[in-house]
Length: 278
Ligand code: 13P
Image 1 (tube, rainbow, N blue to C red):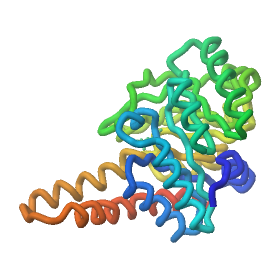
Image 2: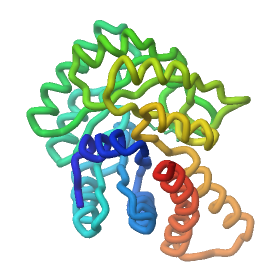
Image 3: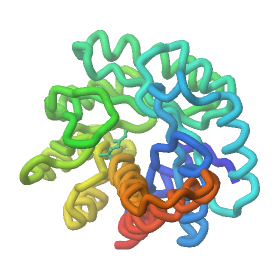
């Protein structure tokens, strides 16, 4: 069933687990995410980034996810990931996304507060929950996200930001990166603890891919309720494709697409299990 993202995350916060938000770009990624969550009997967040708006029929995509969500008993949320434009947010709200992320992390705090507050007012009128970010998540290898400068979230600014904007969940920059880490990950769990105490709303970890499992577990105990996962899933599908090309054997596209879906499922299963268990 389609459920508001906030409802899913408040349940996660109360019960000390986290929900995977898988970035999707086509039918196979959506099917894989819902299939895996259903098998593991866990909620799942289907996340479409604004960067895919030029290539994905957003209204068609939303309709498809809603139908697929209504067919399953597990809670499914439909989230707009990393949106920088108000128009994209309004478009997503109009076609039934259950949450939106406004990413004003490149702005100074005051400006980020002003822009985010306006988005929260619009989204809340439609019953849609809002994620925002302060600090900035850097980009590692193989990521498809925008470059961030890696500034960690300041707990006092986070407190001010949440109080002033009324956001429902907050992406905290604690040293994770979008994509794979180049070198040892330096993730500041003590900082996460300070942020959790300062804001008391569900926290979001961007850059799930490559993050060591023990760190993810500890982060969940410190208030992370949503873990975004993109690159590792993409790498699994691309490796399948590379092996397939090496074989030099011509197949029908439908076979390739469904095998690519199968190649993504083990990575998704790993994350869903890891996030849902104590
Ligand atoms: P990864 O690509 O590191 O999994 O991060 C995804 C993400 O945070 C999308 O918002």
